[in-house]
Length: 126
Image (cartoon, rainbow, N blue to C red):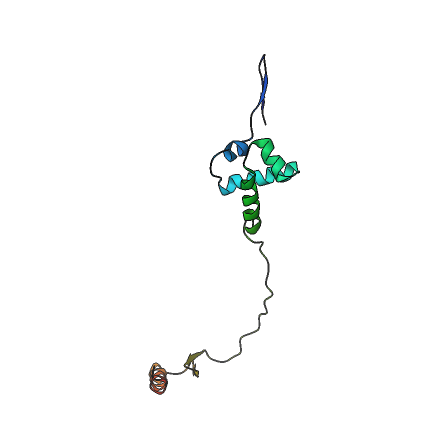
């Protein structure tokens, strides 16, 4: 806060959050600033809002809304991971269609895979 002294009076500049809070609508940032200022001053919401000439219900609304919304992104964490060596076998693909699971090893030809999938399609009516 700034204090300006003149010969006759002393005036205090209002904080930016208070000037913004006097507008008809609050942004999320303004609401967060007002809630922080209220918590820093302590006391009841009614007394705080009355002292600053603001509508009491607006602080109640934003206090509830901000409590539901976490501030910032969630904290980062680590997930345990187990790394096992890859078994010494060739690549394979498993396809499940209508409850039928087909495993095709990496050495299979494209023609064989196409025949197997056509057969599954005919049996399943896909």
